[in-house]
Image 1 (cartoon, helix red, strand yellow):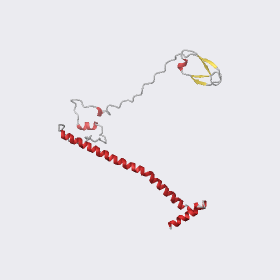
Image 2 (tube, rainbow, N blue to C red; image 1 turned 45 degrees about the horizontal axis):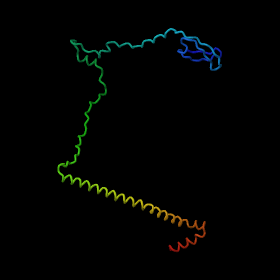
Image 3 (cartoon, one colour; image 1 turned 60 degrees about the horizontal axis):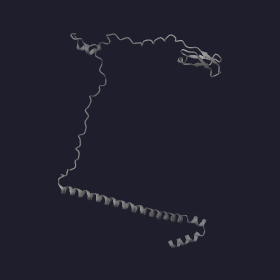
Image 4 (cartoon, rainbow, N blue to C red; image 1 turned 120 degrees about the vertical axis):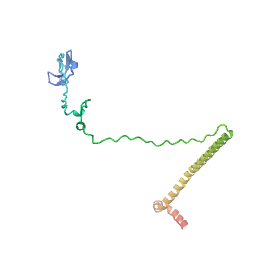
Length: 194
């Protein structure tokens, strides 16, 4: 329900359920005026919505293709063909059967008879020997890795030292300009190289 303030004419929308059956005191947010709004009496019910509009059916002559021939009635093939709807332009292909590849036979290890103690001892010995070889190979790989790890810090140190020497030699003119006593050192090194 739409309610307006009697003082400033500001309009408010109040739900009908809030005013049904009793009187309410309202306060305007604009001017602060207070007034009472009377209870709503249940008014006439809203008219029911109109029934949906259903389009009229076409005449039976247009629906002839839906009619089935009655037993005992004579029908010609031409009349039946004329009454049938046209065939669709696209027909779905017939479903194809799924073909799966043939199953692969599982490889089953040769079974060793359990009642032969010699065979059991041989297979156990083979397993122990394989484990020893595997462990010895793993130990060899581990030792090689440790040697590489021990050698790498030394190798890096030597490379850094050679790099420092090369930079000093290439920049010797600049160094001699900044620190003149180094000229004697570079002169002595150049004599040794020649």
